[in-house]
Amino acid sequence: IEAAAESGDHRAVLRAAEQHRVREHGSAAELVALAASLRHAGRVRDARDVVIRASAILDGSAAFPEWVAALVGIDLDVLQGRGDDALAALEAMRGMLPVQLHERAAALGGRARLQRDPTLAPAFEAVAFTPLGEGVLLEIRESVRAGALDADPSALKRAVELAEKHSLPVEAGEARLWLGEQQSASERRDNVTLCRATLQRCGVRGWDSRLENCSAGDARAASVRRADPALDALSQAEFRVAAAVAGGLTNREVAATLLISVKTVDFHLQQMYRKLGIRSRTELAVRMTRQQESDDE
Image (cartoon, rainbow, N blue to C red; front, side, top):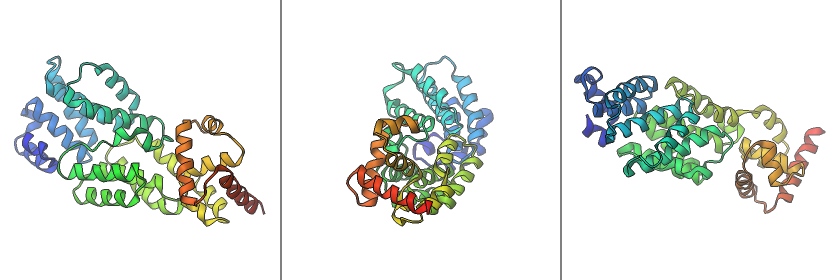
């Protein structure tokens, strides 16, 4: 079981666990490997039950498997929408966690912060996309990192295809989430619907706020954007920033109004300049103002 887990073959772990009745008779290390594999298979609630059993066996041992079990539990916290609990647990581990697990813990912290602030651009939590794992899981996460951080939808589409081919629904759903944040309203509707259905089927509710933020106001935005088709290239988050800029707000005022960071505002502006082929906020304001005037007519 542990060998299959180290190779990244979660389906082999599940087969071996069933054959050897690991849930009833497995060691703590085997239970931790099973919990991680159940998570990858989209059985998040089952994974929680197994990791609780493993933690009970390991309680107070301060052994390496106990730290691994704790991180698996924190990963499940993030997936199930308990990002604040995850961050608190990571803070409690500070200074005690084995060095081999620091990278994984940092990535979990980044994921929890992206969950807590649904308007935060992935680029400002790049650590969340650290490609960890083995085999096909690592390949998928490398594609997700490239797609999310470099705004490369083709990389995210490859990640979705690979994840679906290898029965990794959580990875597929998350890749669809980051893809949806880059798509225009017309492009993302079906993708976001499928993403939500996939993640909810797995027991994953941690990304609900980002999904709502991604799809909110699509109908309104579509009616406003008709006069300038180029603005259809903007994501919903970018469009909100653009509208605020057109209203004469400074970056700091936009951040305060939309409850995002100034860095996130600047990131969205740079993305919009690239998509629209413009160079300044003044040009952006002109485009948005023309849109509004056309809509008012």
